[in-house]
Length: 368
Image (tube, rainbow, N blue to C red; front, side, top):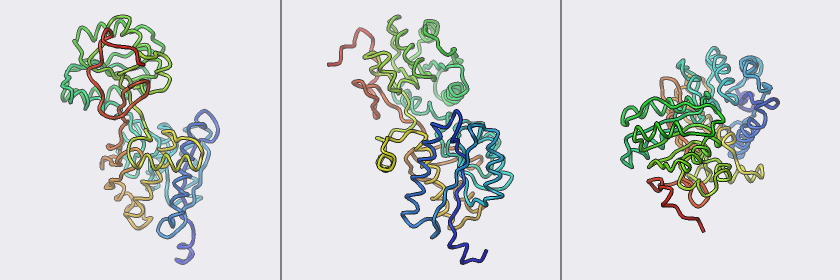
């Protein structure tokens, strides 16, 4: 292809996004975020003076197919840029293909640490890592002067990874024992409350789903127990308040993406709602931010050369709808994004400085 023809041809961005199968609904939002980014880039003149074309292939929600499909994007379709698939398992498979081809890939929706555990050179994470879900609550506990923690986790891979990363970070500054794992569907947390009381825990930090958070609160009330700080990842979910009513008040939770926090998030939420007539989900923000970071690297490098793009992504710092993009240069793992800490106040999850300590049960009054 001559230089003039290459300059006129579009820049091809390839991604594998589940369009059928178990992940299709969530991955559809991821694709919509990418499509919004493409439209905005092209409306602003494209990249390097060229229009951006987005090509999405369907892995049918089967992670094992991701490598084959990225191989097609790289070798047959000659994609200029790659965005990773939806989900950690698929991203792990896809990353191997990108590494072999020495092609840069932005990991938009693979939050598990294992994806970056082998120190890839060409993979850069824009997903919110599981490892940072406890970062905000540890900072809050430190500011409040709390030093004795108890960490709990539902026994599933996501919650386990969040809890183990939080425990490692806490050991530098806090007194923290072993993680208290529990099975899914547990409705009585008496044993865990007894352990927390015995340790005189000042902060209860729990990773699991919304039902776990609700059953913890029910157990607290039944046992007349109220730790000075109560954090449960699932407490930010809208169903939490439906499950426990006013007893949800003053609970702390983690929101993956909050369109109210930050000018970039608000601008993205407005643009997404204008295009798709619904509010954006985390998956939508992940797709949009993956494209945004990739475009910023292209502009910084002023080229599609993969080595120069790799260097740009390693050094890039960028404010996005998910926070500040920043990665560890040794493996491309995200270090800047973290969930937003919120507290239930008057029946709504509210960001900002929370009220502590978590009130004792006899100190509470009905919300008017």
